Structure formats: C-alpha cells, structure tokens
Amino acid sequence: MTPEFNLIQQYFTRPAAQADLGVGDDAALISVTPGQQMAISADMLVAGTHFFADADPYQLGWKSLAVNISDMAAMGAQPKWATLAIALPEINERWLAEFSRGFFACAEKFNVDLIGGDTTRGPLTISVQIMGEVAAGKALQRAGAKIGDEIWVSGCLGDAALALAHTLSKFNLPEAEFASCAKALHTPQPRVSLGLALLGLANSAIDVSDGLLADLGHILQCSKVGAEIHLTNIPKSSIVSNYFSINAVRQMALVGGDDYELCFTAPYKAHAEISRLGEYLDIPLSVIGQITGNTGLVVRGFNHEILDFKETGFDHFA
Amino acid sequence: MTPEFNLIQQYFTRPAAQADLGVGDDAALISVTPGQQMAISADMLVAGTHFFADADPYQLGWKSLAVNISDMAAMGAQPKWATLAIALPEINERWLAEFSRGFFACAEKFNVDLIGGDTTRGPLTISVQIMGEVAAGKALQRAGAKIGDEIWVSGCLGDAALALAHTLSKFNLPEAEFASCAKALHTPQPRVSLGLALLGLANSAIDVSDGLLADLGHILQCSKVGAEIHLTNIPKSSIVSNYFSINAVRQMALVGGDDYELCFTAPYKAHAEISRLGEYLDIPLSVIGQITGNTGLVVRGFNHEILDFKETGFDHFA
Image (tube, rainbow over all chains, first blue to last red):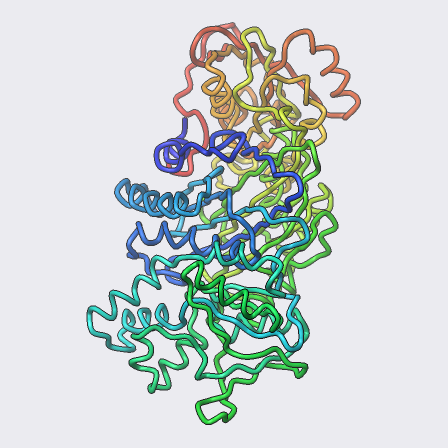
C-alpha cells in the first residue's frame, strides 16, 4: 500500500450507504434511482485564491463540500454522492484529521456519501465533485426565467463579504458581529430543502456564490431576459443593516460572493405558495424585483434612481 | 459574464451528445441507462508532481483524461462523461487552446462528453472526474481474484518509465527509441475495449498506473490472496528488451508507473477465450504468473530465484 492509499483509508473512508461500491477500487459504483436524472457539478478551491493557506481545516472541509452541495440545491437536486481530490504540500496528520472531520460533518448533515478520493503532493488544492438526483425533466435551470417572473432571494446577503472585508482589515466590525458574519463565510448552509421544494414552482434558479448581480446575470443571460431589482428589497441581516448606509456595504450585499443563498424566479401565481414554503421551512424568502423584457439588469436605489455598478461579482481571474 | 465563465465557454464547451444538460448551469444533467450501474473515478494531476510545468499542453490534455478513462477500463465500464476542474497561474490562450485540443482529442476517441468544468487561478493543477456505465453487478473489481487464477497483463510494461528516466537524464536512449517510449509516457491509450470484453471472463482487474508490483499488490490485498509471477514472462517492447539485462530497466518494467495497461486475473478455463480476445482486439495479452494461497507477492528471476524489490511503486508522497 502506498501512503496515498493509506491517507484515503485513514481519513476519507467511511461507510457509503448510498453507494454499491465506495472508496478503494479503480472506481466507485452507484445505482441511480429509476425515473431520476443525475445532477453533477465540480468545484475547485485553491489556497490563496479561495481561502487562506492557514484557514481552519475543519471549516475548510465543511465549506469545500458545502459550496458543491449548494449547486445541487440550485438545481433542485437531492445531493447523494461526492468525490474528493486533494493536493497537500505535506502529510500533516492533525490538519487531515480536522479537514476530514469538517468534510464529513457537512456530508452527514446533508446525507452525502464520499465515494471516491485522490490525495497527492502539491500546493494545497481541493477539488470536489458532487452528484445528486432530480426527477427527470424537473431540474431548476438558469434558462427558465420568464418575463413577469418575480425574483426571489433566500436568507440574507452580504454577511460573508462583510466577514471577509473585516478579515482583510478593509472594514472593522465589533467581535460579536464579526463572529456572526464569519459563520456565513466559513460554514455556509446550502439551501437543499428549499431547492427540492421549489421543483414545479420556480422557473429558474441559481445559488449566490459569485455575488447577486453576477449570478442573477447568469439567469438573465441564459434565459435571454432582463430584470429590475430594488436596493430596498435586498434581504439583510441585522448586522449588514447596521452598516447599509455605507456604500461599500451595499456593494457587499449586491456583488459580494460566498452567500450560498438561492436566487430564483417564479410566476406571480406561485407567490402565496412560495411564501408559505418559506414559513414552513423557516427560511426567509424575499422578492427583490421582477424579470423584464429588456436586456440587462437594472438596480434601483432608495429614490428609485438607477444605480451604476462597475463590479459585477467576484472573478477568480481578476 | 466573468472571465472564468468565458474560459469554460471558449475552450471547454463542446456538444455533449450523451448528456441531457452539459456545461453552463449549476450542474450537468445525465440519464443512466436502466440496468446499468454508474462507475465513477477522480484523479488529480499536479505540476511538479505528475508532470513538468512546461509539459506539452496538448499531451497534458490528452493524458489528464486518458488516465481517468483507464480507471473505467479497469472496471470493465464504458466511459461516457467527464468533468474538468483546472487551476491556472494565468490565462494563457495558446496553452488553453492546446490543452483543450488534446483533452477533446482523447474525449472524441473514447466517446466521452465533457459535461462540467471549473477554471480558477492557482498553481497549475488538473482535476478530472470520469463517469461511465457498467452492467449492474458485472464490474471488474480488485477483490475478485481466486487462488489458481492466471495473472494477465495487456500490452507491454516499462516504456513510459524508460522515457521518464531518459527525460530525467537517468538513462540515455537513442532519439528514435526515446520517441517511441515517449508516446507511451505522454499519450497513453487506455484499454477500454479490453476491459469491456473481460466482463464475465476476468475475476479481478486493475490498471497499471503506479507500477505492476504496486497495482497487483492492490488486487492481492483486496482479494486476500498471494501471487507468484515470473520475470521471464513480463511483456516488453523491443526497446525495453534491448536493455532488459540492466537491472534498472527490469525495475522500470516491474515498478515503473504510467503504463496504463490492464492487469487482470482469470480462471484457467477462460485461457483460450481470453487468448482469442487478444487476437480479435489486436492487443498482446500475456500470462505473467498465478494467484496463490500464500500471502504476498513473489517475483521469480531468470533462474527461478526469488527476487527482492524494495521499491513497490511510484508514491506521490515519497
């Protein structure tokens, strides 16, 4: 056995109840439920680009899986399986133990089996692929937005960006407020139950990972429609609200990334049912605007004026 | 659109005939054929560990997919879908064009659709996940080897290791011989057709990526059996044969990696049919030894003496 094989056995092998064959062969084997399509997404997190090299390994383990699960939520898919490929500068047992503890904490919460792994030497890089199931033909795609649709956002926006700004000393928060925002940044909670419940109700959906304007922009582009949203309707935590008079903080809520809330569009006739859904799931759901027949995204300010945003989201090649 | 989105659209988006939804949404959507299990494997290639940072991008694109397809071959699965996550130090248009050309050349040859992608800034790292289909319950696993099974190897071993040794100036080959070995190293040809044909014939299989002794060792360990193989029976190219009197070259054939041939075990009663298979597929197939009830792997030399190998394969954490 090579040490590589040892690492996978020691840190990344747990019973995979939903797999026919898990970690340890040339490939894993799974069976897809008849009538279901398989939804598949891949994300790579690189030290220095997506996280600090000295990031807490437990939180990193959680987040590297959570951001992928969020893609399943955005499709209305039930996440079930994941693979993990990780490059490490060296074998650090304590780091690996904490990383895998965080990864599996997230996996257990969302009932995901880790079915394959690859560990190798290299600059700290984490590549996760998530796989899930969705009723055939029912997935929530970016391309389904219709003119007149209401534009909804779950939870609140800006906390993660505010925590990052504090960490980078670009903004100064009291400890208690930072601690609250840091949770949103480091241990995001993907909206799986909401995504599943929106099947048949929403016309389109995306998760807010690169920032609301950028991600809503993807929906508009794929659906070939425009939109108008209102700054006053952007859902905010009490902390973001405290600083919302500051332009930089308003920007964080609109173009800051890492929120992992769902942005979705639905016809007005679904409004009441979606509202009840939010109460039932105990997830705040807000209408922030409407899909239009124009091209592009118009953001209106407190006095209904059209706001101008240069930045349209976090860009890994900026 | 972020440049990241541009990169995927520009270089990594091709029609995905076998997918219901390809690159460009939160997730891809595929349908698995009824009665088939899905086989899934992930591999990460890191500059400096698996390849040189200045490696030819076309060959790198080919190899990064080929080594994953080889895992499907080792399961007897038909590769169908892949995702690619890639970290790049910078946007180098020429590099990306060549890399994607090589990746898709391999994808087209083996009929694999690229259905998802992620590009980001970081140290050059390539993470590919491959997905395929295999008849439910029929996959070739590592754990199936039976006492008395013949141990087979496809093609020949050692060329890739010899080319690497030449590249590292640890061995000196004439240009023509190096060119021939370099093909094995840089553009491996996974044995998909052989893997598919071995369903129902072979008891166990693995692809030779870390070196014959290490990979056969995985079969022995998973199957809880031992094996005896004979140096005289190791299949070699004419080039490796030229230097086989040199101990270092014998080691390359036994512990050198990157051959991507199949090592499989089958009962003697299947011998004739497997031989005919090799002729039909025009793939050399050699019996190199037998599965035993002992523990461990015994390698016998030209005079039937037991050889001692310290090194048992390439280790990414050596």
